[in-house]
Image (cartoon, rainbow, N blue to C red; front, top):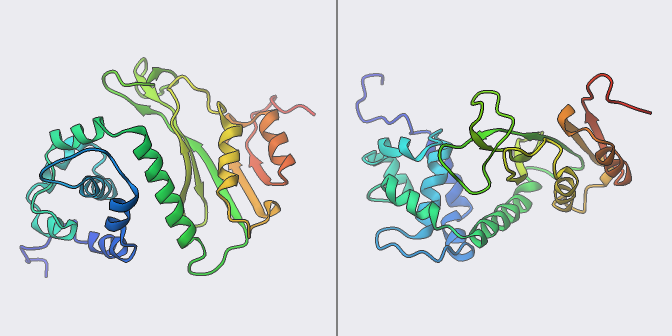
Length: 241
């Protein structure tokens, strides 16, 4: 077995491919996500699937996708004769309109609702709220210099994330400039997270977990008002009764 020469280290992607086929994801992308772009070689759904598969495989930068150009097994799974060139992928992303991002979010949320009750109905939720510093090279819209522990002085984004703890499902996200504080926009963010919760789950059965950067009187009062549970790390000296 270890001497086999036709094995790809991306072979495990067939499970992802089967899952996507089960969801008829390609057809859903074709139907509900419109980019307004025309390419003679690739449909917009193929661009989106190619990018999604690359990210799942850990290739987080477009300049790392060269290894997929001639990987026959992977291309067969993706249904492509050739993986898009780096320049083609960059051009596709550069001209991606905002409305397409919203369409992707709606499709993602509808699929999550469909899968949420599987394998069985859930009656409680734990949400983990977090943020990250995404370093940007070059000039990009909305990127600003802010807190950046690894690359001081570089422009960055400081997005907010919400994940459902039990299964690690991505629940909601918000892109913010690099100079935004952790708590910036937290109330509207929490509101959207709650709007996406199925009505079958009582607010009292929802708990939020956050670190000290998100602590504020307004956030605590909001969660109390909504009857949600919460665990928030508080730095010594910040709490006032």
